[in-house]
Length: 183
Image (cartoon, rainbow, N blue to C red; front, side, top):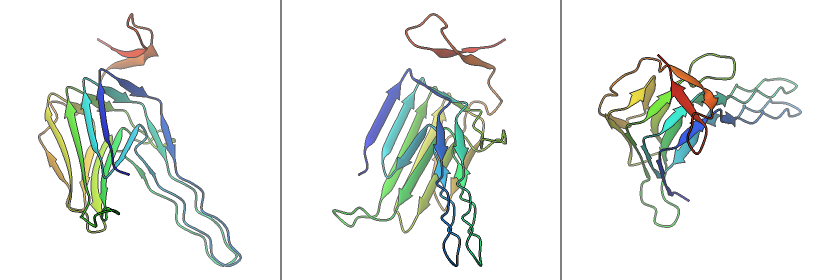
């Protein structure tokens, strides 16, 4: 069921989304599962991140299954920090689905696919006749890499797409571990 997530002054780091392995059948191999949103996957919901650091998260595509005659496809992997997806119709009402993400003074950076290859930190996507998926990145954000897919809408431009100089997650004097900003 769609929901609302609001995070303020939070750090989401070193999380992993792992796609499932495709099964092997007597004839055909199944496709590997997709890994979307290493830190946050937002299907048909509302996400607001304010003063948040979402960094060093991983998305790993599921491996293809091998069958006697065919091998399935490897799954997809993207949106290491945040993947927002509007998909299909609401079950209860039949209304076309929407998804929304709002970023304020936040950092989305350093996402990878498990092998060290960079992936988009923010992905905004809509599929299967959804009404709209929107992402607002207009207020003082650093987003290293972003994608808008299948007619989704992203408003605003991040202040920077440069790699942030973030230190390791550590005790930097606050109540919780954070990434210190380097020189």
